[in-house]
Amino acid sequence: MATTQIFFASTLYGAATLAAAIDSDCFSPGARRLLLVSNNTTTPETTPALDEMPGFERLRGRFDRVLSWNETIAPFHPGGWSPRADDIPLWERHLRLLWGLGDDTVELFVESIQVNPALALAQLFTDAPIEVYADGLMSYGPTRNKIDPLVGTRVRRLLHLDLVPGLTPLLLGEFDVPPELVPTEAFLKVLAELADGEERLPVPADSALLLGQYLSALSILTAEEEENLHVRMLLGAVERGHRQIVFKPHPTAPARWSRMLEREARTLGVELTVLESPVLAEVLYQRYRPALVVGCFSTALLTASTFYGIPVARTGTDVLLERLSPYQNSNRVPVTIVDALVPDLAEGTPQPAPADLAGLLQAVGFAMQPQIRSDLRPAAERFLSRHLDGHTWRYFKRRRLTTLALPGAIPKQFAFIPRSAGLRRVVRRARSLKRAALKHASVG
Image 1: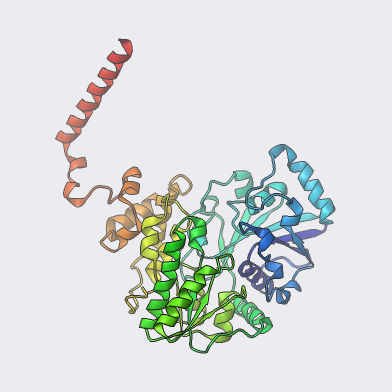
Image 2 (image 1 turned 120 degrees about the vertical axis):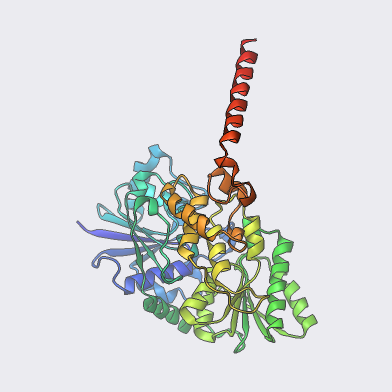
């Protein structure tokens, strides 16, 4: 029986990762390969899908056919639609007819399996084996939602880039999914292809590159706070001596944000270039080699540092660590990694790497998802007992530690309380009296 491999992607970065994995023979040969493209932006009608972005044509040849998930489920939005259980057999038959799959064995290769649209696709092909590829730094954190075992147990492996050398992803660890690296050399080769196909951009040599992320769309910052964050990036780069600045806004961010930066740049007397083309930051690294990359917690900070050796700096992570709510917000792990590894823009001097980065991420991961990753409790207790200090406290909340009965929940000056036999007797007596009073009230 023939096999059809369906590769699901929503970003050019993800498609480039898949291309690198294909070039590295990470997938079984001989199968038909379909690229299923999804545009997950808030208003996909007004933003280009990845197959319409500059450079995609360099990747197209690796696939036999390109399909659109948005067209398949229209008028529904990819992020909000999932099949009803009773409709799954009908949907699978429909997709097999629509995509010409016939009776082929289907294999799925998806990103972000814990949410739609990837989860919906996995639910529609109930017997298909699944492989997941990482969509950036979030793969180093725990799975953000509990996945139905009928889906989770079908995942064979997690493919990921070596963004933080030596660090093992926590994603899908509850199903013992083995992680596997996509070779860095293959990924850089794909990026070089994209860079060669990109039209010439007005990027000055040795400029500082500022990365916008559109955090207000995620309700992490207000629009005004995010604009001020970009201004701080500009001011910090200028203070480091850079006179040529390039701002790469998020593709869906409002145009007015760049106008505030332009006014500030004129005041400072520096040259500011705002990129309007939705080009990958990695393409800019490959082609123009910036002197400095500044951002908040973008994955692109780690690709610049790890893959290209470009100096990087962060700003705003302290605010986000405090602001992210609830604690299990999936952005917490990328923010934590960038805060721990990337120098602060204002300080200017590299900070020492954490003594136990893996332990830190395991502790944060357990605190985020104690039900999904209950196996991480011993590692979390070990890290908090040994490394919880004035610096690492920024990654935790005392209320969260208290709820989970983890070390650090009680300030050191009160640590004797749980060990006091007298106090425990008083607490037991108080509870007994409370129960008796409640019982008496209910009888009355």
